[in-house]
Image (cartoon, rainbow, N blue to C red; front, side, top):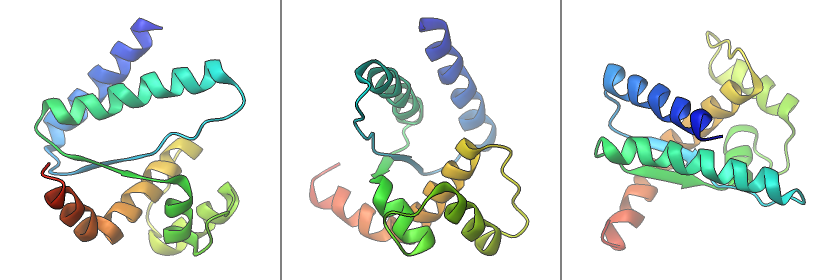
Length: 126
């Protein structure tokens, strides 16, 4: 398990140092019935938030329903609906996996909501 978390961190650090993004966004964790899976997801998410923070990048968070509503227009959209909208919104993008498609959906959500997110962070003093 620790080696997987290290691999996530090293991969993200390589992307961050290579591409030098100014912003980052993640999806908030949903709690499901499988506590072990939720814990593992939380650990990976923690690493995914730590890596940008180590580069001085603020990380925005979005609820899964907000991502779906932003991309599809409905908060309870399924993966197929998200994939269809991604093809419309980003016709040249060809995400190789469902996780990559989710990442693009989160990026679209952040691009759409980033001004209000930045304002909220300013108000709370981050």
